[in-house]
Image (cartoon, rainbow, N blue to C red):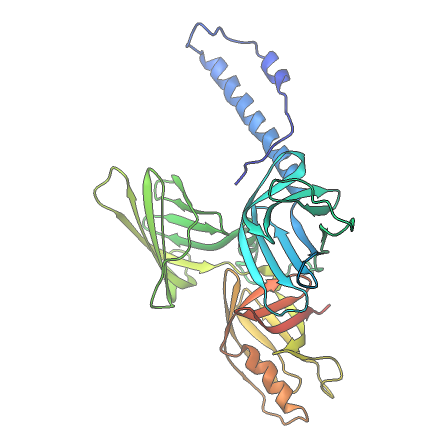
Length: 397
C-alpha cells in the first residue's frame, strides 16, 4: 500500500526542455512519444526517491505505556515495516496475557499514520521528531496531565552481526526477506514464479513473463496441517494455491524444497483453469541466524549461576535448517523449519551426561523439542505458544 501524501515534486524543467504539443491534435510524433516516455520514467524515479525518503522516517519499533482508568497502564509495542504492514502488541501492566495485531497502514498529511485495525482503541498516530504520538479516534491530539502519557518512544533495534553464511542460497533468501517476501515458489517446463508478501499481496509471474498481483488473503481452513490453501481474485483473474509439506526437487536447478506447490489460475473470460506444478519454501528471517543465550524457560529465570559449568544456549542455522545448543548440561542438535512468524523444532538428540540441575536442563530442552512456536524478535527473541511465553533468548556476541 502506497497511499500517502508526498511532498510536491515539480518537473517543469523536463516539460519546458522539449516544448509542448497542441491540445487540438491527438497526433504525437515518435520523437515526442520518446520524450514523453523519458519524462514519465524520470517522474516515476523522483516519486520513488521521495517515497523511500518519506517511509524511512516512519519504519521502526515504538513502545510506551498509556493511562488506564481501571488498571496500572496499557503497554503498547508497535512496529511499522517498509512494505506498509505493521505488528502490534497490547497488554495491561502486570499481566501475562497480551493481544497481538497485524495489518497495514497508510501515511497521511502532517506525519499522521493510519492503521487499518485499532491498537489500544485508536487507528491514528503522529510522528513528531523521533516519537510516535497516540491520537484519538478523530486523529486529534489527546490532552492529558502528563506530557508523555500518549507518547510511544522508538525502540533501539538489537545489534545484528553482519550477515554471514556459506549456504549457496543465503544471499538470495536475504534479499527475499528484505523485500517482505515470506514464501516463494518456482516451476519449470514451463517456467513460472510465485511470491507471497507479508500481509500484502500474492504475485504470480506466468510462463509468458506476465506479472499478476492478487490481494493477500488468509489461508483457507484445512483438516490436514501439512496442506495450506490460498484463494484470491481480482476482476480479471482468480488464483488457487495449494502448498503441501512434502520434499520437492526442482529438476532444473536440482534444489530441494520443503513444499510441493500446485497453482490453478483462471481468467474471468476463460472456461478452464490452467494448472502449474512446482516447488516452494518459506523464507527464513535471517535476523534469527546465530547464537542465543537462554534467559527464561517456561517462566523460570536462567542466569550464569543456574548451572555450574555450562551456559544454556541455542544456535539457529537458518539456511541449513539446523538447531544446536546446550541445555546447561548436555549438548543437543536437531532440525528446524520456518513459517512466517513460526519456528518448528524437530525432535532433538544429544549427549546423556548427568548434572546437578537436571530438572532445569530438561525444562529448557522440553520447551523446544518437537514443538512449533510463534516468535517475536524485538530486543529479545521470544518464543510463544498462544499467548504464553515459552522461552526468552538474548543474542550472544
